[in-house]
Length: 255
Ligand code: IPD
Ligand code: CA
Image (cartoon, rainbow, N blue to C red; front, side, top):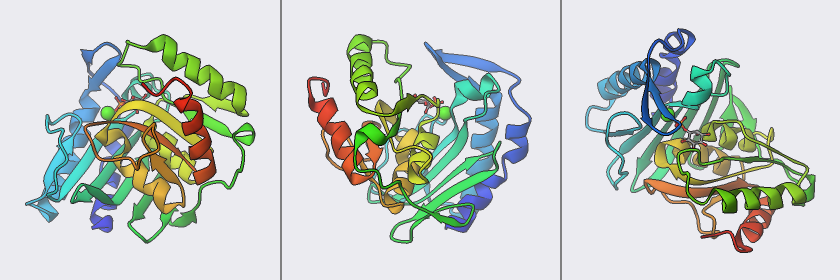
């Protein structure tokens, strides 16, 4: 399974290298490009050839609900805004779930040619080297990525008050523009933690398993284990940092 998933994401490198030709708006600050559609079509074709009965939840195919049935969960381009601005920091994110649990995951970042992958109980890898989350004990020593939930324009003041509080309690904050990469970078120690409210399932499904298999914790804003809901609030980091972030979130900002 993981080999086919890796083959599928690698097969779209030339589409991603080709960049964007047309962009459509799906909502405020929410775009889909011709490359998103082409990547989705190509990966779907590779997966369906090998697993014809498997469901496919993907950002641009209209299916949003992960069920107990075997399901691929695809974000053809996570970080579409970065991609259309030629920023880098975008990735293909592909998870595979059974009984609403991700058991295989691959994230492909084409600029650095990095493939992050994990299988349940088998550890997490970056280009075939085992990865682990950082061991920081205290948030004050940590680099934390925040996601701004750009498509949700309600509650901005509260959200940024919380970011301010986190900034005051950590080393510094980052905003990459790709939740899948925020999770993978947390898994390999380029970041110490990440949080974002209201992520869609294809943004976090693969990265969630990669963080867990790298020894980290992935929860919602209340500290419950993250679930494959269509929308979820996500906090990731090693167990200490996850807890400290949840404590700050809990101080007035959880709702
Ligand atoms: C977005 C990115 C971004 C995050 C948004 C996501 P998309 O995914 O992951 O970092 O802040 O919440 O929706 O739309 O580029 O696939
Ligand atoms: Ca996307």
